[in-house]
Length: 367
Ligand SMILES: Nc1ncnc2c1ncn2[C@@H]1O[C@H](COP(=O)(O)OP(=O)(O)OP(=O)(O)O)[C@@H](O)[C@H]1O
Ligand SMILES: CC(=O)N[C@H]1[C@@H]2OC[C@@H](O2)[C@@H](O)[C@@H]1O[C@H](C)C(=O)O
Image (cartoon, rainbow, N blue to C red):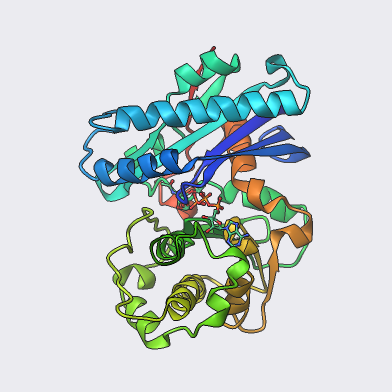
């Protein structure tokens, strides 16, 4: 049975709420619907940055001490506003939507402690938008000993299968954190986080240039990457460990560039993201033939060039070139995951998060 699913994603870049509608039975996508975006304003973004700093001390998934309670209310309200605007702009009614997939905002990810925390009050959201909401997608996975991320691979596979392209294909999400999905035919699906996405570069641009990000990678294109710095950074144990593996947004925040020219710093951080993605190649069964890049980083032309320089003869394409809605893919994925959760289908697998067996998940809040 086909469902009209509305996915909501607020990711580690802390830029805003992505909204995307899909028609799906949880196995294939019958139709892509419209998408939307509700940016966080500077005050909201600063609050979320503080929330990530305070969350490092959390021990329980549902604890909201200090400003985490306020941050959760802001995240919930922003998602309710995003849905209300989307429904109005697309002349829909709440009853037109069967299920909302609500990721929430990750403030802490410590799978080794079987803890991952996404703030967002799903019962309050369901009441505000008058639509059933599925949430807490990652909890069951980490409680079972999985990495709890990445969760989009099952959606990347659905998209890639429709391409009818010879594998191995890698779909790369370059968000705040980067993650890959390796797809080779119908039976091989491997995934992991690879390293920083845009987070280090965004934080650098904000601190040094008072800009939210390096638009199209123009600033980094003026600089020269410090390959020795990148080689040293890639010696961190994470990069040699095989999939499955996952990261928190600020796991590499301790890496310091030192005294560099701003453009060289931007070039180095952009190249570090590209090099960390390419570092996964020897950890995969076969060398990928094509890389499809999605997430906000796919708009960074310097990032795409630097990735091309590091993946040999494989092709590197922005997802838009395939007609995919790059910015909306993660939101679409959580609509897809909500449909799968409703049907008890697996959301994660041993080869994507390291869970002992394929696992479903998600909790429903009704209006
Ligand atoms: N025009 C652009 N040029 C370069 N980079 C861009 C552009 N637009 C967005 N970005 C980058 O993309 C980021 C947002 O990407 P995205 O929304 O995929 O991240 P996210 O979903 O929050 O992260 P994650 O996937 O880790 O949860 C921005 O923070 C910025 O770094
Ligand atoms: C814990 C968490 O929110 N992880 C995010 C983060 O952002 C990108 C990467 O790390 C990915 O593993 C994951 O999000 C995407 C949506 C995922 O689960 O596939």
